[in-house]
Image 1 (cartoon, rainbow, N blue to C red):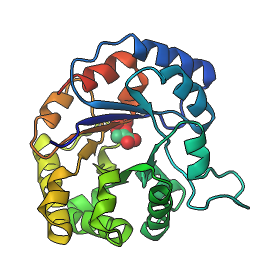
Image 2 (cartoon, protein in one colour; image 1 turned 180 degrees about the vertical axis):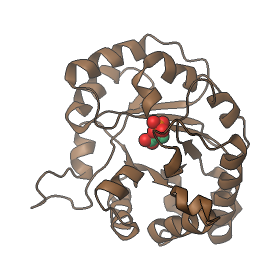
Image 3 (cartoon, helix red, strand yellow; image 1 turned 60 degrees about the vertical axis):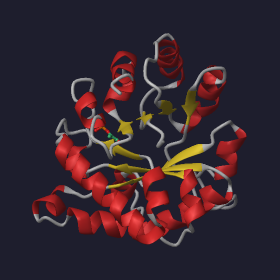
Image 4 (cartoon, protein in one colour; image 1 turned 135 degrees about the horizontal axis):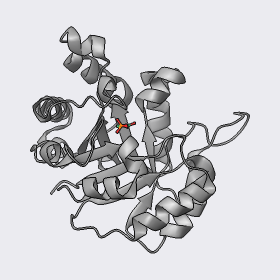
Length: 249
Ligand code: PEP
């Protein structure tokens, strides 16, 4: 059985006291689904969040990390630093990192290697921009993002990877891929994995959808057979909305 996952990416939102209050609201919510639940606060609040959620089933994860173990990389955070504050999962390749911080597939391949060497789990994000979708190139783009950053790995490494298909045109725009568009792409991603690594790896891979998932569309998106959950941005900042999505399975 593939894992169902709902992960909230808080991005650069919530200072320390806002983090504490949102976490306290989250811990008062009742989970009725079996999904794994994760939240990704900003770096400065990871430890506080980890401490506050230690006894719960909500996992605290990071939004990014550097590929180096330590050294002269001013402003950066390494995998072992994340692990030292209780964080064992990291989001890599988010479209905002790709767009605003020039993260390329080649750089992301290095980050992937560093995370795996540190026994971290990865939520690896990718997705096409609107121009790719309009020109019908979305599958080509997604295939090359996956191949360039992940296909140097052996099959065993995929046990520690979760994929997140996030069409860039649907992130933070209120525009969602239709459940059918999401399903078509997720099936294509699974086929791409199966071609390279075989059916076992492909069928065990959790593939999340991200892009304006809200309480009113989550159920339909999650009902598609190849959609195993969601990476949630805006709606993760509200405890009611986030848990409505968690419980949409
Ligand atoms: C995201 O940033 O990963 C995301 C999916 O954001 P939103 O839900 O706000 O579109």
